[in-house]
Image 1 (cartoon, rainbow, N blue to C red):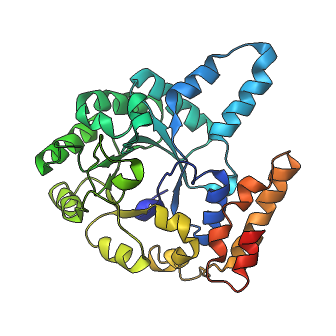
Image 2: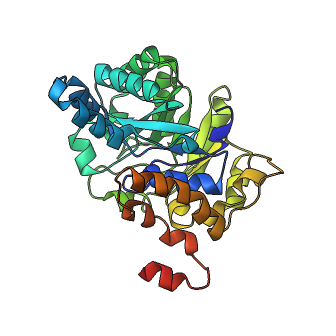
Length: 313
């Protein structure tokens, strides 16, 4: 896990499921991958159902939320929640399941997430978040990290960002993935919150400069590999989201250019598809459907001759 955070693929609901992660692992053997956000309370309810007659069903539900293919390592479980006890329980489950790291979502601005009392709205309650981080760190030997914005609504000064990070660092947060846009909790939907608030890479650079001992990743607005390399002069890691999902092969040079793996061969559409096939065979043999895998393959054939026919399939 050491330095895998130099390049990571951000957790994205409805995108970074186990099938896309297997796909992305064909593109980079070294990058850090994240699960979709899993709600701690949902794991608690499943774990609490101790009926012997429903043990099989319980295991299936846990598999849907936590399951992954071993090829996905290094892999982070992202959790959502605001209750220290539930998050600690979920962190223990993630460790037992075999994840490499636990991450707390403090960046999602959606109304649904706010109603559940997690995501970006928790940036208004740093002491509560600190209790959550401390409980998670005490519950598992795995690194506990956080993903957050530079601010929310009118609470977007650098001083507030610095105080927030200092509070969580003191509680045991091992790394900070900072989306370099603030979030408007009212008035903008999640898609708009990814584009409308201006990027402030300078604030993330300043955070690393003033807290050099902390591990700081930059997220937001990184669309190509060259800018990612440039940002690594200022921060410890870069995190790419929608651009990784929409253009997987754009990142085929990550292992060579970010991780210095001179022996890595750059992935092509054909090698990615061949790499996914064993996973697809195992999945379908176990009773899974092919479509959850195939839906992620459309972007892989971007720019490839005959891609229109593939998309039609």
